[in-house]
Length: 146
Length: 180
Image 1 (tube, rainbow over the protein chains, first blue to last red):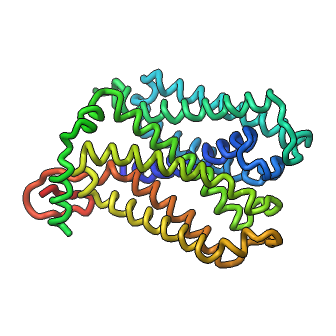
Image 2 (spheres, rainbow over the protein chains, first blue to last red):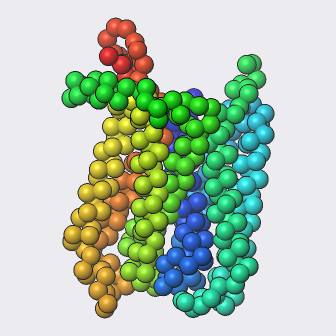
Image 3 (cartoon, each protein chain N blue to C red):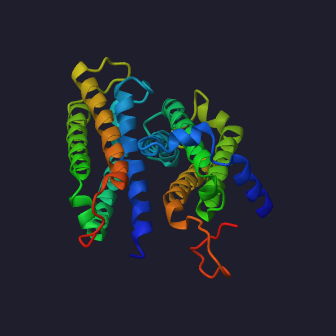
């Protein structure tokens, strides 16, 4: 499959932007760069979502390339679950930071609930990346014939 | 250059205590996972700062956004450390790998570009009365930075497809690199 290396590369770049921006938002909630108005972090979300959809598309293509390799590996389902949880957390974080306007003033003390969501988000992304990397080491069947 | 590469591979050897630890079942995958986490920190901090310079989230003061940079440097440090572990364990797989050469080239461009930013654009951007729109020169630097780090990721991700191996006869395939 000639395009395989290119798709894999796009998958890594998309990860950098999706996870990177989500992590930056989490870090901001946890007190990093406290002078950045939290509500303005929403301007980076379209790029985060572009990274996410790039990875959903490239991920599907990688899955079409080697369906048996992924689908027979429990770690693959763990990766998908962690990504799903991370995205739900992102939506919940976005809702409570970008719509209500209660947490927008710089220096405002953020709710403990929001901090917990941010920590959970970071943990889920770290888990999803680790699971993704382990896919290369934990598969039992590369193709149906093997 | 070729002699230098051979010398480097021979000197590193790949038989150090570090290499023996890296050859245990879990060490390499764990180091790789950390390498990917470092990548995300780097893109999340430095990439978003570049995007801010390019005009995203203009209401965020650039100086405030710059507070994310230490986290990008942390990601970079993690990746230098884990990357060194890979090279110390399998030196020939990197030193002879054209994809690795491109990765190093883009890392150098990224580094020099960042140095240029601090040397030329620090004062106008971090002044108290700095305008929200970054000067044109800083925008060019930000665009080069984004391209350089995407280049680094690409070089890293393609490493595995340009692995050198021992082969006989003249080299005919660009994708194939022969180990001396």
